[in-house]
Each structure stands twice: as structure tokens, then as C-alpha cells.
Amino acid sequence: MAEKKKIILTGDRPTGKLHVGHYAGSLKRRVELQNSGEYDKIFIMIADAQALTDNADNPAKIRENIMEVALDYLSIGIDPAKSTILVQSHISELTELSFYYMNLVTVSRLQRNPTVKAEIQMRNFETSIPVGFFTYPISQAADITAFEATTVPVGEDQAPMLEQTREIVHKFNAVYGETLTEPQMLLSENQACLRLPGIDGKAKMSKSLGNCIYLSESEEDVRKKIMSMFTDPGHIRVQDPGKLEGNTVFTYLDAFSRQEHFAEYLPEYANLDELKEHYQRGGLGDVKVKKFLNSVMQEELSPIRARRAEYEKHIDQVYEILRSGSETAKETAAKTLEKVKHAMRIDYFRDPVFLAEQKEKFQKF
Ligand code: TRP
View 1 (tube, rainbow, N blue to C red):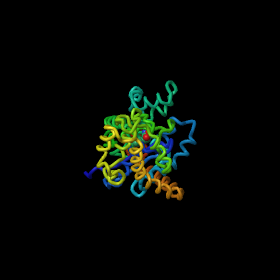
View 2 (view 1 turned 120 degrees about the vertical axis):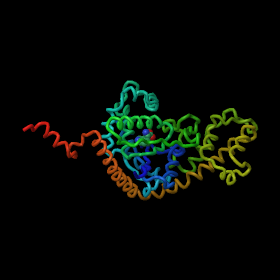
View 3 (view 1 turned 180 degrees about the horizontal axis):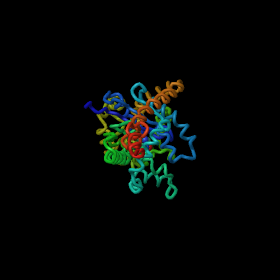
View 4 (view 1 turned 180 degrees about the vertical axis):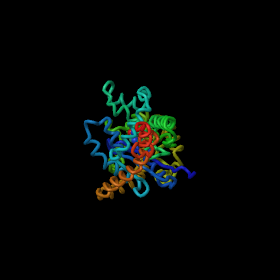
């Protein structure tokens, strides 16, 4: 048998511009995986249909962010020659798959999904949870299986979705025969990247808290945000010993700085451990550390900014990338849907024995 193809599927909800938390947690890794040449196919999905599950009254917000997210993808180095970028709502097959998968999942199983639970609380849905929102883990299983993904690089918060997907795959294959591919989740290996805090030190970066650094932000705005970052509130004078725990600037350095950055921007220190050691001992001011972080971040963000500026001049090309990517993706998903219906034996008009079987049953003369 031919070796199984390695296929990536991942995506983001287009509810806003992507920020450095997305970048550290998942986007950067995607580009590395894309460029590793190890994958046969890569699908990156703008999950507009999923975004609508809790934004039914505001489709304009989703519409506005389709192009923003596409530009974010292209600017970080997602290459349309290597990766297929698609818009979820264009792939109607995903909805059909979801409908069949719904029969394999119980309400109580959905209620146990910790990410959905947390989101329900955050949005104050309580007793008014939209059914579509409640069932989005099932639709996410459709996304993943439709493209026969073997690998799903995502942020840590998506682990429950992957678990649910794998359960659906097992159940489907057990009931209808080996059909769907079981996906593996791929997390960032860098602990600091798993959940980058907001610039105010709050656990999560979120647009409503106004504590994000966006990939598309200007150099000056990024600098201002870094210089205003939360550090150790007890570190008042330079000579005071400083704490690393909960210190956002150091969390960002853990996520983004590399050994080479020291030689280039802060040669008094050989590496991050030395810098941390000095900070804890006392005698190292926040401003100096923040300036270093700014250099590191600007080095990461400036090529992203430059690429974005180029693509912004050619929106018609970006539109075409999305349109043709969505077409290609639709063809792939249609093949999986065909297999699924065949496995369930509901492909009556493609099934050569269906008619013969029914004739045998009814035409007894
Ligand atoms: N739930 C993901 C998020 O909120 C977006 C998403 C939708 C996704 N479908 C997916 C991620 C399939 C990975 C695979 O960011």
C-alpha cells in the first residue's frame, strides 16, 4: 500500500485581525511546516461559518475580516503556491458532513467540552446558547476530516476540538467501516508560545481588552505597546531585584528571543538566562529590557509588515487566491463526502446494486 499522505488542515475565525498571540501559538509554526517540504498538502481555512455561530447578528464583522485574515496569512509567509487558503462557507460539503456527524455525538459529550464551556461563560450565553455555536466542535471535525488531515497545528485551546474529532473518527469508522482519517494535533514546543499574555499581563490577548499587538500594526505603535507592557509591579527602582514570574516582557522574550539577538542588540549578555539572572539580582531596569524586546519583535514583524504592504497593493490577486483556493478545497471535500455517503450506504444513485436490490424486493413476479 502506498504510504499515507501527510496533510495539514488548520484555520482561524475571522472575527478580527490576527495578533502576535496567534503568531507565537500557531501561525509561525505553520509557515515552518509549509516550508519544511514534508507535507503533501496544506489547507489553511478562514473559518467564517464557525465565526458566524456566535455572530449571527453581525455578519458584517465577519465579512470585514475575511481579507484582513487573508492578508495576515500572506504577510507571515503562507505561500499560495504551497498552501491552499480557503473560505469555509464556500465549502457546503462541510455542512453536510457535520449533519451526519451530529448523529454520532451526544449532547452531554458536547456539554463537557472545556473550550466551549469557557466560551459560553465568556459570552454570557448561559441559557441562550445558539445551537450552531454549541455544536461547532462537530463542524470542526467536519473541517478536519473533509481534507483527510493527518496533522492539525493549532493553539492549546483547540485540544478539546481535536479530541472530539478523533472520537467522531473512531465512532464513524466503527459504525460504517474504515473511512475517515484520524488527525494528530501539533502544539508549539515552546511553553511561552502556548498562551502569550496580553500586554497588560492578563492571561489572554483579546480585542475587547485592548491588550493585543497586531501583526499589521505600525512600528511605532508596536514600540509604544512594548514600552507600556506590564512587568513586575514590585520592581520600582533599577537596583531592586525583579521577578520573572508573571512578567510579560520576559514571557515575550521566552517566546521570541534567540541567542543571536543578544550579540546583535544586547551584547553585554550572552543569552536570556544571563539577562534574567541580572534582572532577578537587581540593577537592571525595565526600560532596557523593553528596548531589547522591541528590537527582537521589530526584527520579526518588519518583514511581515513589508509583505503585507505589497499584497495590499494587489487586493485583486488576494481575492483570486481565496477564490481559487476555495474551489480546490471544495473538490477535495466533495470526494470525502462521497466516501462518507458510500460508507453509510446512502449514495443511492451512485450505488449500482441499489436498484437491483429494490427490484428484487418489490417486483416479485
Ligand atoms: N476553532 C478555531 C479557532 O477558534 C478555528 C477553526 C475552525 C479550526 N475549524 C478548524 C482550527 C479546523 C483547526 C482546524 O481558532
